[in-house]
Image (cartoon, rainbow, N blue to C red; front, side, top):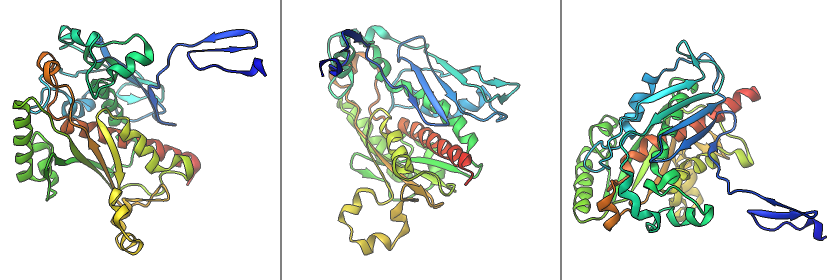
Length: 353
């Protein structure tokens, strides 16, 4: 019937009335532990509202500083020269050093923007970025540094990840590290080495090769991609539910929501395509700590591919960009893993299992 025909957004006609909607974006993540991030790369501030955090958890701005320092720009020669102190300010949800059970709001002010460097992007679109897609979708956008699509948005996720870790059992340990940049691949794992080199690689010798490779590409006006691994030790059992709340599905969504991440796998990942069944079941490490979408209690082993940054040529000369974003993706990936696990952990508590 004509009266029941809906036309495509942003408007539709129903029973003689035309309804018009502005384009909307999803800025929230999670079920019981739910976050909403806000802010743009060159706006006054970025922040996050965290809902669902239990009351009585010790939390202060000082808790956030170490993780924000790991994500912040200007850490080394392989990252962007933008120099932001990333000083957090808690606005709500905390009283006398403990969470109240109410929504927690935290902001980080932008203090080192150079918006004039991005004026050419008002009408010129960078290849490999969201510029053109967002301009076409919304019709009006903040072109400065990528606006809402900038990797700077991830500062809010790191904040939420700190709180998520506090919800999980204390022995849960989330470790991210670089296993490959370009042709250079780590052969050893020494967790103590990860924060001792600018590429966050657990293999000391390969870390040096990776760094030299990135700096060479930077000199040539090019960039590098890589592969990140996130390990979760002492993972609680039975996290995740069948069908649409599978732990692997929620982890995949979390990882692929990170800017620059192009692929996700767990356990043996894409290597399973080459395996026979007997080979696959012979080693439980192939399962990556998940069976049927539910955690087994074994270590989770996750992998994500990170694309090379595509702000090259004239854009790179005028703005400030990373030659390799891989090292800065790691604290964000750890935070997203923590949020997924905290959400699943709270869900498990409500089910009384």
